Amino acid sequence: MPLAAAPLCLFLGRGLLPWIFATGVCWVAFVIAIALALDLSGGSVITYQMGGWAPPLGIEYRLDALSAVALLIVTGAAAAVSLYSRPSVLREIEPANHGLFYTLFLLCVTGLAGVVATGDAFNVFVFLEVASLSTYCLVALGGRKDRRALSAAYTYLVMGTIGATFFVIGVGLAYMVTGTLNMVDLAQRLPPIGDNRTVAAAFTFIAVGMGMKLAMFPLHLWLPNAYTFAPSAVSAFLAGTSTKVAVYVLIRFLFTVFGLEFDFEQFALIAVFLPLGIAAMFVASIVAIFQVDAKRMLAYSSVAQIGYMILGISLATKTGLTGAILHMGNHAIMKVALFMTMGAIMYRLGTTSIPHMAGLGRDMPWTMAAFVIGGLSLIGVPLTVGFISKWYLIQAALELGWWPIAMLIVMSSLLAVIYVWRIVEMAYLQPSPPNRQISRAPTIMLLPMWVLVLANIYFGIDASFPTTLANQAALLLLGGQP
Image (cartoon, rainbow, N blue to C red; front, side, top):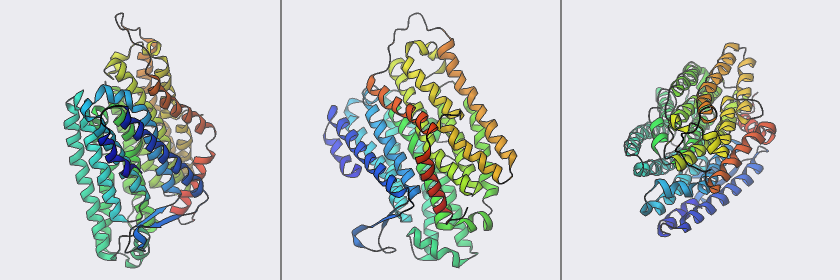
């Protein structure tokens, strides 16, 4: 649906029509994703053969519980951001490019959803490039407000292209030794090959390529500028989806294609992923504390939160994987909401500089209340979604007897208190400038923002559906092992 709808937006011009059309398409896609998730939560698998050609010759679409989580993230973020985007687009993007914005937005949704749905390794690369090329252009559209968006988009393009090249080389090497590109077929053909340098090289290229795409520390240098200088609606969408889909691809190849034994016994990945995840949790959080721009602060926070996902993956247990998968969805909910608050502040103030936010708690009460709740979730306070996934990660570390890791998770979470409190203090404890006259954000921006904020609380209290889905996904990835 997004693929078919994307070119139509270009012909609908610059008025309300492209926004209404794109928003309707995204919401219908989200409803379909919810229906699929309800069906897949029981452990079933849905497959579809493109053109009737059976795999491995044909391209197979394959959805399971892990795919359902990622598909909900992509379509849910697209639905919320598309509804929210109208005021932001009017203010931050050239009028002649409004139709182009919604075309690129739907193409980005197409690419990300395609990555999740496909069961073909090369098709993953194709959809990644559809999403990436759209994303580079979306970031560059922020050049109307800040010319630094163009250099950020260029840096993103260079880093993203390197990551994609690494990934496709890895896929090519895997194809060279197996003769297949279907991921299920690859999973069956790789184990009999055993200790093979080509397979090891394929694994390394894929892991590094996806590490760059998901902004794994220290391969994250493209992310802060891309999130900071992109249009507000683009920042919100990318923060919730692009890195999460790359994490999905990494998990899919680690556990489905190469398998647990190869990854964590033969290749000793725990010695690589675990320290990098912990380093991201601390280094990125410390850097976030010293940022002057709130969007840049949230961007470094995203690098830190990706560290938690990498940590959960490296533990390679059911509880650890459940925590990592949960954190994918939970971080998407909280970070899209937080970037939406920054978009509302940009709409009224024209800047997201923290010193300019003095007194915003009184001038924009609904927006700043949303930021506070999203910030509490980012920290991991109980009754928010951030607590649920971090609790699973702590449990996973304690199950293995690694209590220092559990302590590091708690300590790194406390760093989030510092950078969230900086904005809270400025908004609520500092007086407003005497000559500033602003009002609350437009209702169309507040509505999706508060839906996500309330979802932060609801799924922090009743997490039965997401935890069931994440548990089922972890079980399937581990082949039914505990």
